[in-house]
Length: 360
Ligand SMILES: NC(=O)c1ccc[n+]([C@@H]2O[C@H](COP(=O)([O-])OP(=O)(O)OC[C@H]3O[C@@H](n4cnc5c(N)ncnc54)[C@H](OP(=O)(O)O)[C@@H]3O)[C@@H](O)[C@H]2O)c1
Image 1 (cartoon, rainbow, N blue to C red):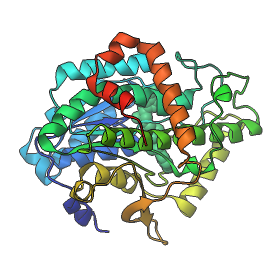
Image 2 (tube, rainbow, N blue to C red; image 1 turned 90 degrees about the vertical axis):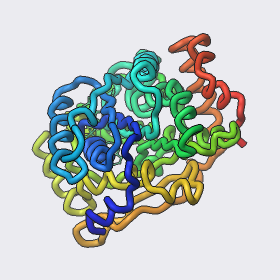
Image 3 (cartoon, rainbow, N blue to C red; image 1 turned 180 degrees about the vertical axis):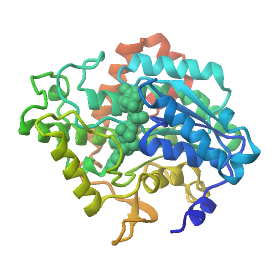
Image 4 (cartoon, rainbow, N blue to C red; image 1 turned 30 degrees about the vertical axis):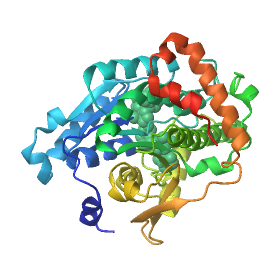
């Protein structure tokens, strides 16, 4: 698909407010640029880590170079918002701060993620790091923002939430909560640690699959079907820094060589890997066709691996397991209660509607 063809398939987003978690780097950076170049004001929600400022500057510069960017002040259109997903409490607080800044939120893309981390310590909520950042932190951030998304969708009839999953979830086994709460001396120095880390990454993405379906069911049961919440596998953007440098059993030169080979065999560009989540967030067919709780995957050309478009893909049998999904919801709401307290949870009316809505 030609770049212009993809851009034309995305709605004019002038006047819309978007958040992209992890929006200053990798796939998130390209997502920020697409949304802002179509006119949205984009909040890059991330830590002030190395490269964050440079990523935001790059986004502003590249949006300025587009036709729409020239007429608007791109510096104002792309803003940073502090977010650390490693604790439910800090993610919740970040959302509370956001609610004081903006009266509306049209698009929320939960893109940030970590992969291949070691198991040295548990998160402040007592969980393994990938499960904590990829799933728990996003759960706290999204639920705290639900009133804002709902109030916006009451007016526009079109709220969008996207979870960036990974087809790695297909390799996950049934979630093992004891394992997810147990720190062990897995420091990345043994080859076995690599396989274990990959399986924990897969588990964190299976958790996001369950979240996608459960949230979506509950939104519809609570008469909030004007919020379109879906998930996507972005593609194989081997060129990003995701998962690099943690597993020291592999020499950095070997790691680079393996990644270079994977890039040739199955790699997609980082720009192309942003397209599916942008599509779910801003293509009008999602609303027109009432797309809820689905997993979308991109298709790429056999030679060159360039983007051809995207479509819904059925979840695996384990991904569709309703009992496992409900168990995760209960565990996660329990963790949120512990992290932020009952009073905070009660302050978000839409979250309480979802908690009471049921998911059948
Ligand atoms: N690349 C792929 O091939 C691929 C394939 C399937 C799925 N995905 C998914 O796509 C998403 C983006 O991946 P990517 O390849 O673009 O990775 P990336 O370049 O490493 O970007 C990850 C982003 O997540 C942020 N992040 C990490 N920990 C965070 C925390 N505690 N709080 C807030 N933000 C945090 C990072 O910010 P910091 O720099 O501050 O850490 C960074 O902005 C991830 O969810 C990933 O699992 C990627």
